[in-house]
Length: 52
Image 1 (cartoon, rainbow, N blue to C red):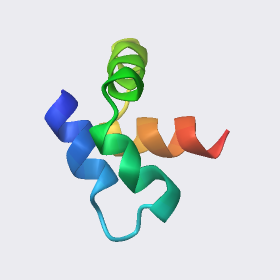
Image 2 (cartoon, rainbow, N blue to C red; image 1 turned 45 degrees about the vertical axis):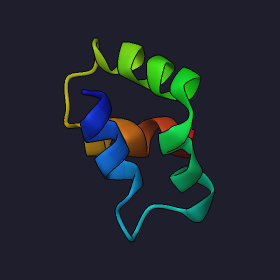
Image 3 (spheres, rainbow, N blue to C red; image 1 turned 135 degrees about the vertical axis):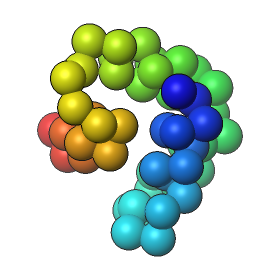
């Protein structure tokens, strides 16, 4: 799961502010834990989480 989240952060359309998060373990831990109860794709989860 962590690798998928990192991959999403590396996409060209990802806001530059979030690209550095791929190297921060605490943020990845929180995102990975939060995704477990989400019913959509990782991309949808990150878009939802980062836009609110």
